[in-house]
Amino acid sequence: MPGAVPTYSFLGPEGTFTEAALMQVPGAGDAVRVPASTVNAALDAVRESSADAAMVPIENSVEGGVTATLDAIAGGQELRIVREVLVPISFVLVARPGTRLGDVRRVSTHGHAWAQCRLWMDQHIPGAEYVPGSSTAAAAMGLLEPDCHYDAAICAPLVAQEQPGLPVLAENIGDNPGAVTRFVLVSRPGKLPERTGADKTTVVVPLPEDRPGALMEILDQFATRGVNLSRIESRPTGQYLGHYFFSIDADGHVGDARVADALAGLHRISPATRFLGSYPRADRQPIEVQAHTSDRAFAASRNWVESILDTESLQVESGSGPSPTA
Ligand SMILES: O=C(O)C(=O)Cc1ccccc1
Image (cartoon, rainbow, N blue to C red; front, side, top):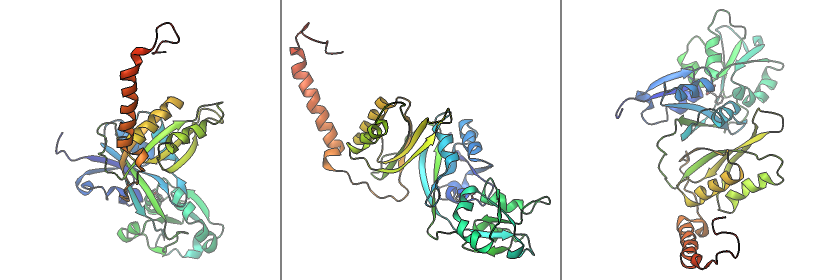
């Protein structure tokens, strides 16, 4: 319905880094925001149409890809990435009032937060036991439950600011002060975001099996068309050992001839290739296109081949070889 307020699901509860990413989306402050307890639940809300789009983490600069997200969007009912958002990440350690650093034995947080605070933990709370949490904010809020079985949580500074019952034991405990996480807004297939000249395209390419050089062939589709890759990760398909797909981010939009041509090449090599969207880059850095891979160069080369077919195909002798359509 035009003008209706959109509904966004996100990895919650309130106070996650994912919610901070969602709040960067224009209009999200006035939208309906529905926290989900897992990435899969946030994406299912979109698949089932109870949300228009979901914000989920996909990659961070320290720990790499968020596998729960990469796997969830690679399979199942098709989804599209329509926007990416970058969030600088800093972590605090919170506990119940009265807890001192020396009392902390068990710490809960999201797996990616734990991985980013490992060195600090080893130095300040050696031997601390990790209790997996569904998100940083869920771990922090869990401390307020009467039957909580851990002593502290790693979360965003904002959670501690808004929750007086959770004093901060230590600030800036991330091992890398420049850590950034990339989030994506995912919706059902529909309207493709417009081409801006500073775009990214995400695809999932199952690796053809028992074919020497298959990965090289896949990469070559991009290389020969001057398309730069900004991320490539292999993930097991989960079907059986040794069966992989590649999750790839390429510079450019499917509306760019060189990207469209590369995707067509991927489809020939791996027909189950899945298009996951073309969307504006968060850093708005325009992509430099070499003259020979520009839209104009692709159109000129297509016209050239068509002109050959137009003028010369009639001269193929019948019966003297394979038919022109073979
Ligand atoms: O748990 C959160 O707050 C999230 O949004 C996921 C996450 C965890 C650690 C770094 C970035 C995102």
